[in-house]
Length: 266
Image (cartoon, rainbow, N blue to C red; front, side, top):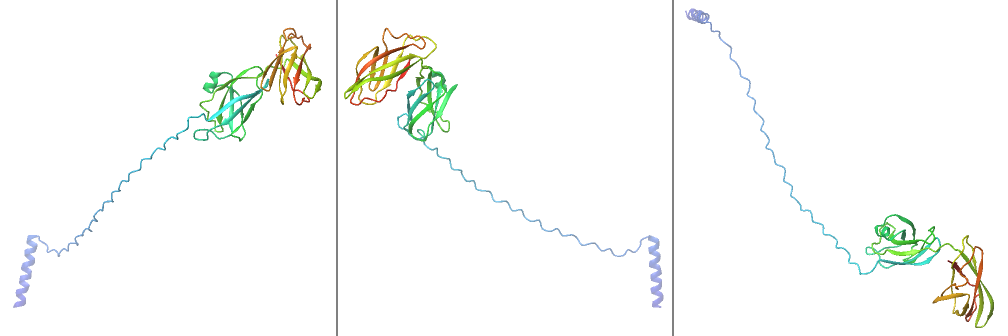
């Protein structure tokens, strides 16, 4: 009886389901919900600490004494050269170290502006010495300036005008006619070696000892210390090419020289 009841119940339920169109669904399992990983908290980078840059302290300019850093003067001249004696007074930063360069200019304006140099020469390692500049034009004026080995110009000294000698237009030779313990008599011969007539001439030299002129004829003497210049007399200044004239002198001295080195010019 019980089995019949269960069978009838099952049939009734199956019929109800078919009538309603509802299928008995199998239980659905939901997938597990994803759990988001925790987001790491961003850590701010440390703010750099500004370090103040020290302000450079300017080096004070050196105090230079009130003196020219270098001095110079012309101490020699020929027809094609000038010799300049220099003295370096101050060292850097107020002056120079050797060697120094002497630059020549044709005029003072060019020397003032350091433009159009015409010649130059460099000294040796001495702080006091001489510089000779060669290959110059005879009987010409020049102005000179100094600079150091790094071409740093001296702003102060503008030397000049220095003139080269004219080309020799004559030649002079001396002959000692007689001598004794206290002096001698000499004759100087002047010859025109040029191609044009001379209207005047002069002969110059430097004494080597205690010589002095006591008398002169045929010329006019001018002495300054040991330096002597004899110019022509009024009657023998004009000389044709290759013509000669003479003058004589009586010289007092403790020792007569073997010879005199003479320079002749117009």
